[in-house]
Image (cartoon, rainbow over all chains, first blue to last red):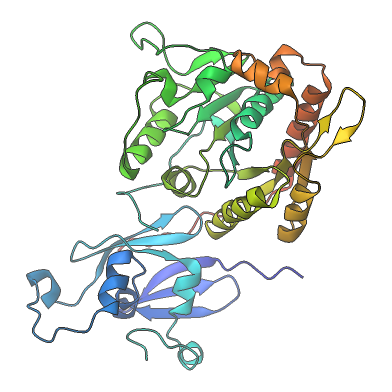
Length: 117
Length: 272
């Protein structure tokens, strides 16, 4: 039997801090904005994550407040692009990647990602 | 994958079906297949457009017998020939001039070709993609409401390797694959014997690997290249020849697959 192709039925916000996704397999995901950003798949962010942390890095003004998405746009039929409050917009989050970031109790037990060790 | 600016899905209400003709490998005859398929569809009474998405190496002008660039002040684009509406970078840039562009320019050119030109009502838009899985493919899959793609390959493993990459790309971006076309499948000698110059069964093997339809095999025929180079594709020049009938059968198979395919759903939006 062909496995069901993962698809979001609806997107919403869980309070001010998280994205909520209802999937076509019945699963309800929530993912904090911080967790999404910490797992941005763009080349720049991947490279940054690979570097040792600089404890003396001076934050830009746009980094002082909590990062929030300004817009979430569908990309074709397979992903979303997020424009963040600091202007970053180069990450394309595939549906599979978003699902892998789910922070519900059941999923959190099985995941190990940046910001969710 | 990197996005290139803001890319909302284009609205193309006058174009009923958009089909990409793709391959991983260059030189497998993708443009020949795209041009002849488009003509075969037009000969069945459909309104068909052919968009040459190979910005760096356009083939449609040569294949359609359009030499030199087009004076847009006197000749509106898309051009019309062999019953098709046609657009190619080759109509606006001389063949001796290299188009040296980075990805965002490719995106801009392709979206302008689709949205700024008056294509009129079309039953089918065939998009002849460049080889590979680069900017043109990314732009089209992210912004164009593609119904699906057909993959062209030749039988040998070196072509199948790259065709697999093309299939994986379309799978990843959730564009339905209507099937595999095996080009240069065999050569019919004057002695009446069938010669499998590049081996046999590659296209069917690939289709079976990915559980997608095998749409058909096209023979290797010097007349195909000759007619393409002369600006009159074989299906237009000899519509009743064996190879033209093979193209017509392929066109029918693709139209059937298109009817069967489940349209990919639009992703829900979130207004913030």
